[in-house]
Structures are given as C-alpha cells and as structure tokens.
Image (cartoon, rainbow, N blue to C red; front, side, top):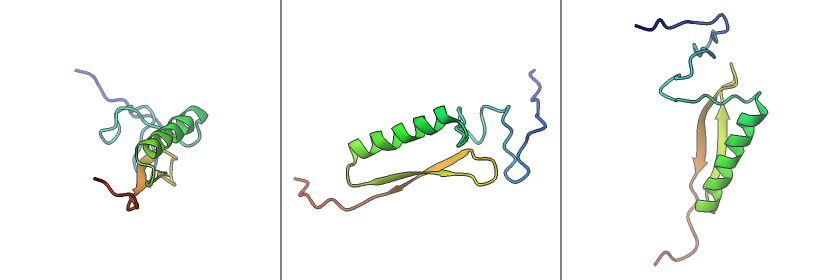
Length: 83
C-alpha cells in the first residue's frame, strides 16, 4: 500500500499540496506562475472560442496558491438563425 506523502508547501487556505498530482479529482494541476501552464490555459480558451465564437472563456485562478480553479464561460446568444 502506497503512503501519501504531504509536502511542506501545502497551501494553508485551500489545502492544495503541489506534490499531489491528483488534487480535487483533477489529474493535472495548472499553475498561474508557470509559463507553460498559462500557455495551455490560453490555448484551451482559444479552442473554445473557435468552437463557440460568441462565448467568452476566461480562466479563474485561486488567489492563495495560483492553481487553476475553473474556467469561467459566458454564453452569449447567437444572432444567427440556427436552422
């Protein structure tokens, strides 16, 4: 049985442990301070915008530790006729 190792860097506010790569059911954690992660987040929002041109996609980062919490998507009514 594997032991779960906690690091010293656990966030005091949300309890996020940077060593735990499976935090809150998410297999991969993205951080605001990492350039690579910000690029992935930006690409995700751009891809969403290509699929749903009228929507607005914006990442929501946690203030305490800078981990990506969620994407905020604002759905706009399309002015085009659908069918």
